[in-house]
Image (cartoon, rainbow over all chains, first blue to last red):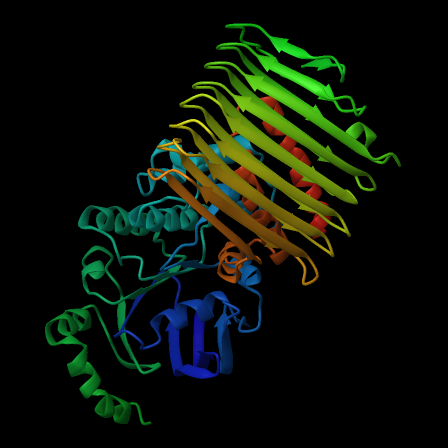
Length: 257
Length: 284
C-alpha cells in the first residue's frame, strides 16, 4: 500500500529525514519509535503533505502513485489520514458540519452520493461511539475548548468517519491519562481491518501495550536504524534510546551504508 | 416580525415582554427614540439595507433608554455597496438592565457605526459586538464608548472584521471609568482578518480609569488565515478554497453564535455565508 524510498525531507533548508525507507502492506500496523528530534513528526507531516516541509529526494508511493507532490486534500481523498499530535482548534465551526463537509468531499471524489445533515447525523452517532464521545460533541466547535484527551479522541472520530486506507497517528498517546489512552487505543483497534494500514508514531512503548504492532522501527537521525517485531519496543523500553543510538554505527554498517 | 415606521417613538411598558422582534427600516434621518420601562424586554432590528444603493447619504440617531431590569437585544444591519451612511446609537442603562447590541456592516463606500453606552444605574451589563465583512474599496468604522458612571457594571466589547480586496476597517473604543464606579468590569477585543495584501484594519482600544477597584482588559489582533489551520482542514479532504471559507466563516460565527432569536440568527448567518462565498470566490 505504501512504499517510501530514500526519502529526504526537511524544513527551512534543514534536512531532517535523510534516506528514509518503509514498506507498509494492507492489514499491517507499523510502530515508529525514536528519540526527540529523530524525525518522527516530520515523517507524519510529510506523508500528509504539510506545505511547510520540502521533499528534496526520494518518493512516496501510495497505492502505486507517487504522492510526494500532491496537495494535502488530494492525499486525504485518496485515503491518507493524519491524526495530529496537536489538533487545531477551529472556533465557530461545529464538529458535525465540519465532518459532513469532509465526508462529502470524499463521497464526491469517489463519485458516491453526498449526505444531507440528517443522513450524516446517523453515521456520526455511530462513529462517535468508537471513542465514547458524549452527545454534545457534534454541536461543539472543532477542538475549541476541548481537553487534551478530547482532542485526541476527536482525531479518532474523524478517522472513523473518513475510513482511510492508511492512518498515520502522530503521538496520539501523548498527554493522555491512562483512561483516555485506553479509550483512544480501543477506538483504533476497532477501526483496524485487514484492508487498512496504520502507522503509529510514538515516543513510548506504553501505547503498544494497547495497540499491538506487527512491526517496530527505530528512527534515529532521519533514518530507520533497526526494525523488528514488538519485542524491539520492549528492548527499547529497557535499554533506552541512548543504547540504541550508540548501536547506530553498527546498525548502519549492517544495512550496508 | 412586526415592522415599525421610522420616526415614531417606540415605547415598551413596564413588565411587557415582546415575543416577536420589532423591525425598523431606517429610511429617513429622523431620530428614533426607544424606551423600555422597568423589566420590559424586547428585540429590535434596525435595517438600512432597503436604501442600500441610493445616492443619498444616510445619517441616523437612535436614542435608547433602558429602565431598571429592562432587557434589550439590539441588532443593527448596514448593508449595500455605494452608499455613505452613519448611525449613532446612544444607550442609557438603568439599574440591573441588560443590553446585547450587535452591529453588522457589509460593504459600503463609507459606513460609520457609533455606539455610546452610559451606565446610569448599578449592576447593568452591556455586550457590544460587531462584525464587518468588506470587499472592494469599502470602508467601515466602528466607534464605541462605554461610560462607566455607576459601580458594578460590566461592558464586554467583541468586534471582528473580515477585510478583502482594498477595503479598510477601523475600530476605535474608549472605556471611561468615572470616579466611584468601583467594581467596573470591562473588556475590549478587536480581531481582524485580512484576506488580501491590500486590505487594512486598524484597532485602537483606549482606557481612562478614574477608580481604583476595577477590572479592565483590552486586546487587538490583525492577521491572516493561519497556515496550520488551513493544513488541518486540507488534510481532511477540503480543498484550499473551501478550507479558507470554513476558517473565515468560523471567524465570523464567533460573533453571530449568541444571537438569541433563532430566525434572526439563521438570516444573518446565511447572509454572511453568501457574502463570504462571494468574497472568497467559492461555491457553497
